[in-house]
Image 1 (cartoon, one colour):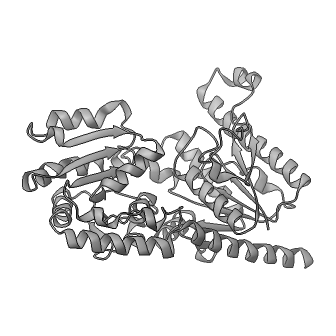
Image 2: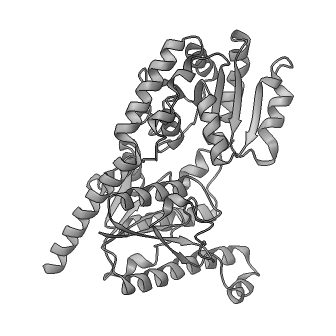
Image 3: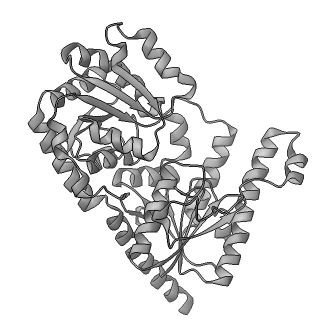
Length: 408
């Protein structure tokens, strides 16, 4: 198949990173490994050079659509920031549609997958002569606001309305979990038959590199990975840690991820008991090798998110055979098997979180058992190969349906 992937960002290809960028990188690599021709269109003003690209993306062709408005349009709309913002969204959608038409004319796509995040194909979907389009929906724009304790402003409301329209115009919608599918259908009044569930998948570390025995060694380290924000439950974790440290004198914690302005680190230093302040390290955003090292040396992975549509960080930890403590919220229970690969606690419950962490810290055999089970679960359900195979199967179905429609 000749497959097109459309995404605002791609891991290893432009400066912007995050879950969407990583997802499309893993999908592209997996589809390439199956022998398909893969072209990825990203929003970028300059095509990345081969030298700057991730070597893992070798054989994946990268196309670009302009990300920034031209100066004349920026000057024309600069008098009103709201007008400027809307003009920017319209420009990116129009530029992406133009680039996709050109790419399709040069070498026709059989199928395209995109994301509702960034709205890049919002204009392209209006073309009835286009190839079939599958749209993956991650955490909704409105959920990113509400689960961080905010209120929907005019821009979020506008993006939510456009995101809904984009999804409705797609030929099929893809979700990561059954629960997230139910939320999408309820929020946007979609029939469930239009939404397919394909779990996310990543490139797991080779089994030979996974040191399962590290879960039982001394030097107990608790690892958190994610943005330090309300939705990720960083406040709940910091509230739980003093109780953990009081009962387990050998435990320490590493907080990995962006902490805007050092807010949460300052809050910890101001509120934590003096005797345990030094036992938490805020390490910021790490390079890929340093993040791998953090996963490898941790004893327990903890991320008490109030909501995740999936939770790729849990798969990363499970891939390194680490036991997980998470919340029974969103799609997390479909990723972390409670009592098998980790322990799930209610969201917003610091005492329950502390108890679960202490249970794992105090039981080396349980840590090893959960870690090994998590690794096995990730290999079967959440690998790069599993993601690519399921996606390719859906694409073939879409292509066949499209042919039948055109014959009729």
